[in-house]
Length: 146
Image (cartoon, rainbow, N blue to C red; front, side, top):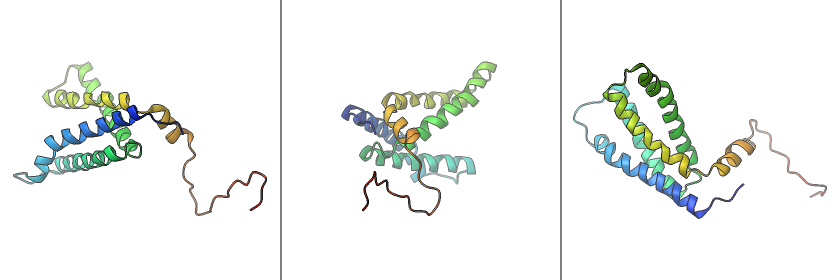
């Protein structure tokens, strides 16, 4: 597993902090106090964002362990930009709601800049996955018997 520099760890922590603070300012006030009941969609979005902000707080302490949270954030925003914003822009149908969400989604550019990509590749692509059955894996003995 490649070593992650202290600079990269602090960069990740800064990303987690920016996200957590941004959501604390924007989402948490409405989660704590909202005048009327939310509809299904609005409730799901607000609760997911509140949960995401708490996971980002955890990421400040454990930046490498919480990388999947940032990968999720990067992935859904890129998909949204490609599937919703780009077609709306190409067809000239971008409205205020899409423009607002587009601006919010563009903050995602900080994630790939801070991400330790060699570590991500080594940890999530090259490393073998967890076992799928209850069998205990055999330890390699390399020619010696216990």
